[in-house]
Image 1 (cartoon, helix red, strand yellow):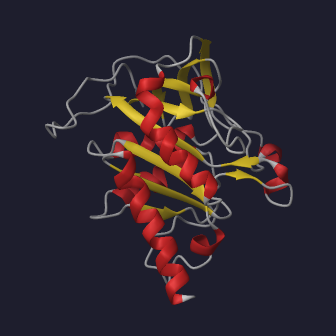
Image 2 (spheres, rainbow, N blue to C red; image 1 turned 180 degrees about the horizontal axis):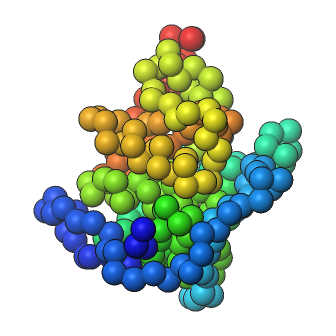
Length: 241
C-alpha cells in the first residue's frame, strides 16, 4: 500500500473535501511494536522526529484553555494509583489538511502547558504505523489515532483523548459507540477502529474498548469537541447508571 504523502491544503470552513496525499513512501518498513511493551503510555508507532522551535502560542491558546478545564475535571492528569503512574490524556488541533498540533508525550499530568509542550504532526501513514513530527517535544502516544480521525473526517478540527471511568464503564448505557476490547491503544488497529466509528452519523464521543477508561471526543472546533463529552459526564451523574 502506498504511504501518505504531503497533504493537500483545504478550507474547512468551506467544507471542501480532501484526502491525505498518497504520493511518496517515507517509511521504508512496517514498524512492529514489541508485544511485551504493550503498556499504558508507551509510544508504539514509528516516528521520524525533528527537533524544532515551539509552535506559535496564538494557535494553541483556545485549545489549551479547554485542555486546562479537562485537567480540572480529572479527564487528563496523573494518578500514581492508575495506569502504572503514567500521565493520561492528550489534545490536538488541525491547522490545514491533515497537519495538526498535538500535546507532547507524558504531558497529561501537567496542569498548565506552554507552547513547549506541543508539537506538529506533519505527515503520517496509519496503515504503516508511522508518522512525521517536529517541535520541542515528541507527540503523544495516541497521535496516530488523532491522525486517523483527521483523515476520516474533513469537518473535524479538534480531537480530545481523555480518561473517564464513569463514562467508559457505562458506555453502553450512555449510548456511546465502543471499539473492540481486543484492540489495544496506540496501534494502527485502534486508529482504524476509531476512524470506522466516526463514519457513522453524529458520532462525537467514542469509548476505546481496549484502552482502560479511554475516550475520544471530536468536533469542528475545540468547544464542539469538548461540550458533548461534558454533557455525557452530566448525563452519567444525573442518571447514576
